Length: 78
Image (cartoon, rainbow, N blue to C red):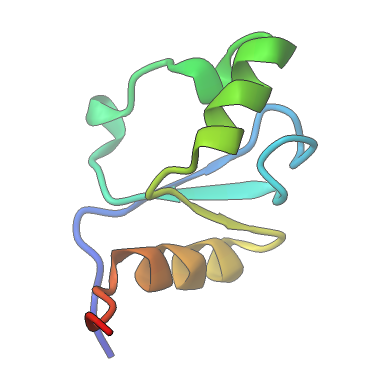
């Protein structure tokens, strides 16, 4: 099992309305997470999540970590 470090898990400001999950997992230290568009107004938040990011999202903390692991795992070229 791969360990993600650094790892920070936070509750989604909008409860998953835009991200799709209540919890967000970042491959960053807490002090490296900027107060960005994922925590901003409704329009900016929607646009942020529609663009796609390497942030894990889940209805539980573990689901968010699992999603982050999947997003960080390189896919083989086909």
